[in-house]
Image (cartoon, rainbow, N blue to C red; front, top):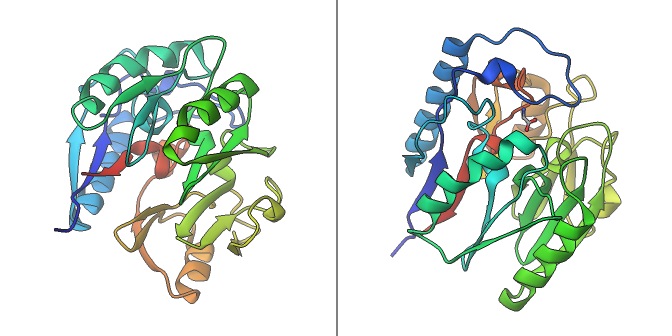
Length: 257
Ligand code: GLY
Protein backbone atom coordinates (compact mmCIF):
# COMPACT_ATOMS: atom_id res chain seq x y z
CA UNK A 1 0.00 0.00 0.00
CA UNK A 2 1.31 3.50 -0.84
CA UNK A 3 2.18 5.38 2.34
CA UNK A 4 -0.02 8.35 3.19
CA UNK A 5 1.78 11.69 3.32
CA UNK A 6 0.87 14.00 6.16
CA UNK A 7 1.74 17.68 6.46
CA UNK A 8 1.33 19.25 9.87
CA UNK A 9 0.69 22.96 9.48
CA UNK A 10 -0.25 25.74 11.89
CA UNK A 11 -2.31 28.84 11.15
CA UNK A 12 -0.76 32.26 10.59
CA UNK A 13 -0.87 34.10 13.92
CA UNK A 14 -2.51 37.49 14.26
CA UNK A 15 0.77 38.65 15.81
CA UNK A 16 2.96 37.61 12.86
CA UNK A 17 4.10 41.21 12.34
CA UNK A 18 6.03 40.83 15.64
CA UNK A 19 7.98 37.86 14.26
CA UNK A 20 11.66 37.20 14.87
CA UNK A 21 13.92 38.62 12.15
CA UNK A 22 17.64 38.11 11.68
CA UNK A 23 18.64 39.01 8.13
CA UNK A 24 15.67 41.02 6.90
CA UNK A 25 14.54 44.51 7.82
CA UNK A 26 11.07 44.68 9.32
CA UNK A 27 8.37 45.46 6.79
CA UNK A 28 4.62 45.72 7.41
CA UNK A 29 2.91 42.33 7.06
CA UNK A 30 -0.69 42.08 5.87
CA UNK A 31 -2.04 39.30 8.12
CA UNK A 32 -5.05 38.61 5.92
CA UNK A 33 -2.88 38.28 2.84
CA UNK A 34 -0.37 36.08 4.71
CA UNK A 35 -3.22 33.81 5.86
CA UNK A 36 -4.58 33.60 2.30
CA UNK A 37 -1.15 32.59 1.04
CA UNK A 38 -0.91 29.97 3.74
CA UNK A 39 -4.30 28.58 2.69
CA UNK A 40 -3.11 28.45 -0.92
CA UNK A 41 -0.04 26.52 0.24
CA UNK A 42 -2.22 24.01 2.10
CA UNK A 43 -4.43 23.68 -0.98
CA UNK A 44 -1.37 22.97 -3.15
CA UNK A 45 -0.34 20.22 -0.75
CA UNK A 46 -3.83 18.70 -0.85
CA UNK A 47 -3.71 18.69 -4.67
CA UNK A 48 -0.53 16.65 -4.33
CA UNK A 49 -2.56 14.16 -2.25
CA UNK A 50 -1.04 15.21 1.05
CA UNK A 51 -3.31 15.07 4.11
CA UNK A 52 -3.01 18.44 5.82
CA UNK A 53 -3.50 18.41 9.58
CA UNK A 54 -3.51 21.73 11.39
CA UNK A 55 -2.02 22.05 14.85
CA UNK A 56 -4.11 24.48 16.94
CA UNK A 57 -3.58 28.18 16.37
CA UNK A 58 -1.27 30.09 18.72
CA UNK A 59 -2.24 33.72 18.12
CA UNK A 60 0.21 35.01 20.73
CA UNK A 61 3.21 33.27 19.14
CA UNK A 62 4.19 35.30 16.06
CA UNK A 63 6.24 32.61 14.29
CA UNK A 64 3.99 29.60 14.98
CA UNK A 65 3.16 29.21 11.27
CA UNK A 66 6.80 28.19 10.72
CA UNK A 67 6.15 24.80 12.28
CA UNK A 68 9.15 23.16 10.61
CA UNK A 69 11.40 24.68 13.27
CA UNK A 70 9.77 22.72 16.10
CA UNK A 71 10.67 19.15 15.12
CA UNK A 72 12.73 16.75 13.04
CA UNK A 73 10.41 14.00 11.80
CA UNK A 74 11.95 10.83 10.41
CA UNK A 75 10.35 7.52 9.43
CA UNK A 76 11.34 5.94 12.74
CA UNK A 77 11.16 8.73 15.31
CA UNK A 78 10.60 12.45 15.86
CA UNK A 79 12.78 14.88 17.78
CA UNK A 80 11.15 17.94 19.29
CA UNK A 81 13.60 20.79 19.00
CA UNK A 82 14.55 23.53 21.40
CA UNK A 83 14.32 26.55 19.08
CA UNK A 84 17.07 29.13 19.21
CA UNK A 85 14.77 32.11 19.78
CA UNK A 86 13.37 32.13 23.35
CA UNK A 87 9.79 32.93 22.41
CA UNK A 88 9.71 30.15 19.84
CA UNK A 89 10.27 27.49 22.54
CA UNK A 90 6.62 27.96 23.47
CA UNK A 91 5.63 26.57 20.08
CA UNK A 92 6.81 23.03 20.71
CA UNK A 93 4.37 21.51 23.23
CA UNK A 94 1.34 21.59 20.94
CA UNK A 95 3.37 20.09 18.08
CA UNK A 96 4.74 17.32 20.32
CA UNK A 97 1.22 16.39 21.36
CA UNK A 98 0.09 15.91 17.75
CA UNK A 99 3.30 14.20 16.63
CA UNK A 100 3.07 11.69 19.46
CA UNK A 101 0.06 10.18 17.65
CA UNK A 102 2.40 9.17 14.79
CA UNK A 103 5.91 8.75 16.16
CA UNK A 104 7.95 7.99 19.23
CA UNK A 105 8.90 11.49 20.33
CA UNK A 106 12.34 12.42 21.70
CA UNK A 107 13.27 15.95 22.77
CA UNK A 108 16.29 18.21 22.91
CA UNK A 109 17.03 20.01 26.15
CA UNK A 110 19.31 22.83 27.33
CA UNK A 111 21.92 23.91 26.47
CA UNK A 112 21.12 22.55 23.02
CA UNK A 113 19.28 24.88 20.66
CA UNK A 114 18.13 23.88 17.20
CA UNK A 115 15.65 25.11 14.60
CA UNK A 116 14.27 22.54 12.18
CA UNK A 117 15.00 24.99 9.37
CA UNK A 118 18.66 24.11 9.90
CA UNK A 119 18.06 20.41 9.27
CA UNK A 120 18.24 18.94 5.77
CA UNK A 121 17.63 15.19 5.63
CA UNK A 122 18.71 13.33 2.51
CA UNK A 123 18.44 9.57 2.79
CA UNK A 124 20.32 8.45 5.88
CA UNK A 125 22.37 11.65 6.07
CA UNK A 126 21.13 14.57 8.13
CA UNK A 127 22.89 17.85 7.35
CA UNK A 128 22.60 20.32 10.22
CA UNK A 129 23.57 23.95 9.78
CA UNK A 130 25.52 25.76 12.48
CA UNK A 131 23.65 29.01 12.91
CA UNK A 132 22.58 31.67 15.34
CA UNK A 133 19.70 29.30 16.19
CA UNK A 134 21.44 25.90 16.13
CA UNK A 135 24.48 25.21 18.29
CA UNK A 136 27.14 22.50 18.44
CA UNK A 137 25.57 20.93 21.54
CA UNK A 138 22.39 20.31 19.54
CA UNK A 139 24.29 18.89 16.59
CA UNK A 140 26.15 16.47 18.86
CA UNK A 141 22.96 15.52 20.68
CA UNK A 142 21.01 14.89 17.47
CA UNK A 143 23.88 12.72 16.25
CA UNK A 144 23.77 10.68 19.45
CA UNK A 145 19.97 10.37 19.36
CA UNK A 146 19.65 9.39 15.71
CA UNK A 147 22.82 7.36 15.21
CA UNK A 148 21.10 4.26 16.66
CA UNK A 149 18.41 4.63 13.97
CA UNK A 150 21.07 4.49 11.25
CA UNK A 151 21.43 8.20 10.53
CA UNK A 152 24.70 10.10 10.05
CA UNK A 153 24.69 13.73 11.16
CA UNK A 154 26.96 16.15 9.28
CA UNK A 155 27.49 19.73 10.48
CA UNK A 156 27.45 22.38 7.74
CA UNK A 157 28.67 25.95 7.95
CA UNK A 158 26.83 28.64 6.06
CA UNK A 159 26.46 32.43 6.25
CA UNK A 160 24.24 35.23 5.06
CA UNK A 161 20.79 33.83 5.83
CA UNK A 162 18.63 32.58 8.71
CA UNK A 163 18.64 28.82 8.26
CA UNK A 164 20.58 26.17 6.36
CA UNK A 165 17.44 25.55 4.31
CA UNK A 166 17.36 29.23 3.34
CA UNK A 167 20.60 28.39 1.51
CA UNK A 168 20.02 24.84 0.26
CA UNK A 169 17.20 22.30 -0.10
CA UNK A 170 16.75 18.94 -1.80
CA UNK A 171 14.62 19.17 -4.96
CA UNK A 172 15.04 15.50 -5.92
CA UNK A 173 16.62 12.58 -4.09
CA UNK A 174 19.98 13.32 -5.73
CA UNK A 175 19.66 17.03 -6.59
CA UNK A 176 20.08 20.08 -4.37
CA UNK A 177 19.15 23.66 -5.09
CA UNK A 178 21.52 26.12 -3.46
CA UNK A 179 22.77 29.66 -3.26
CA UNK A 180 26.57 29.39 -3.58
CA UNK A 181 26.98 32.79 -1.91
CA UNK A 182 25.57 31.35 1.34
CA UNK A 183 26.72 27.70 1.40
CA UNK A 184 29.49 25.80 -0.38
CA UNK A 185 28.40 23.20 -2.92
CA UNK A 186 31.33 21.06 -1.71
CA UNK A 187 29.36 20.42 1.49
CA UNK A 188 27.10 18.14 -0.60
CA UNK A 189 29.44 15.75 -2.38
CA UNK A 190 27.84 13.35 -4.83
CA UNK A 191 24.74 15.47 -5.38
CA UNK A 192 23.83 17.25 -8.58
CA UNK A 193 23.76 20.97 -7.84
CA UNK A 194 21.39 23.59 -9.24
CA UNK A 195 22.28 27.19 -8.39
CA UNK A 196 19.60 29.79 -7.76
CA UNK A 197 19.46 32.58 -10.30
CA UNK A 198 21.90 35.21 -8.92
CA UNK A 199 19.13 37.82 -8.94
CA UNK A 200 17.02 35.60 -6.62
CA UNK A 201 19.25 34.88 -3.60
CA UNK A 202 16.32 33.72 -1.44
CA UNK A 203 15.17 31.13 -3.98
CA UNK A 204 17.01 28.08 -2.61
CA UNK A 205 14.07 26.94 -0.50
CA UNK A 206 11.85 24.43 -2.30
CA UNK A 207 9.69 21.72 -0.74
CA UNK A 208 10.07 18.32 -2.35
CA UNK A 209 6.79 16.45 -2.09
CA UNK A 210 5.15 13.62 -4.02
CA UNK A 211 7.40 13.95 -7.08
CA UNK A 212 6.97 17.73 -7.27
CA UNK A 213 8.72 20.80 -5.90
CA UNK A 214 6.45 23.31 -4.16
CA UNK A 215 8.14 26.61 -4.87
CA UNK A 216 7.56 30.37 -4.36
CA UNK A 217 5.96 32.00 -7.39
CA UNK A 218 8.05 35.15 -6.85
CA UNK A 219 11.24 33.43 -8.06
CA UNK A 220 10.47 32.80 -11.77
CA UNK A 221 14.07 32.68 -12.96
CA UNK A 222 15.07 29.93 -10.55
CA UNK A 223 11.81 28.13 -11.35
CA UNK A 224 12.92 28.09 -15.01
CA UNK A 225 16.17 26.43 -13.93
CA UNK A 226 14.27 23.74 -12.02
CA UNK A 227 11.92 23.07 -14.92
CA UNK A 228 14.87 23.03 -17.32
CA UNK A 229 16.22 20.14 -15.25
CA UNK A 230 12.91 18.32 -15.81
CA UNK A 231 11.49 18.89 -12.33
CA UNK A 232 7.74 19.34 -11.82
CA UNK A 233 7.30 22.69 -10.07
CA UNK A 234 4.10 23.72 -8.30
CA UNK A 235 4.20 27.42 -7.50
CA UNK A 236 2.56 29.02 -4.48
CA UNK A 237 2.23 32.66 -3.49
CA UNK A 238 4.32 33.37 -0.39
CA UNK A 239 5.85 36.83 -0.66
CA UNK A 240 3.89 38.05 2.40
CA UNK A 241 5.17 35.14 4.52
CA UNK A 242 8.66 35.82 3.17
CA UNK A 243 8.60 39.20 4.95
CA UNK A 244 8.62 37.15 8.19
CA UNK A 245 11.72 35.32 6.93
CA UNK A 246 9.69 32.23 6.11
CA UNK A 247 9.58 30.12 2.96
CA UNK A 248 7.94 26.93 1.75
CA UNK A 249 9.68 24.26 3.82
CA UNK A 250 9.09 26.26 7.02
CA UNK A 251 5.31 26.00 6.83
CA UNK A 252 4.93 22.27 7.36
CA UNK A 253 6.30 19.12 8.92
CA UNK A 254 6.01 16.49 6.21
CA UNK A 255 6.10 12.76 6.91
CA UNK A 256 4.58 9.49 5.81
CA UNK A 257 2.47 7.00 7.74
N1 GLY B 1 10.63 34.66 11.53
C1 GLY B 1 11.14 33.35 11.46
C2 GLY B 1 12.15 33.11 12.50
O1 GLY B 1 12.91 34.02 12.78
O2 GLY B 1 12.23 32.08 13.09
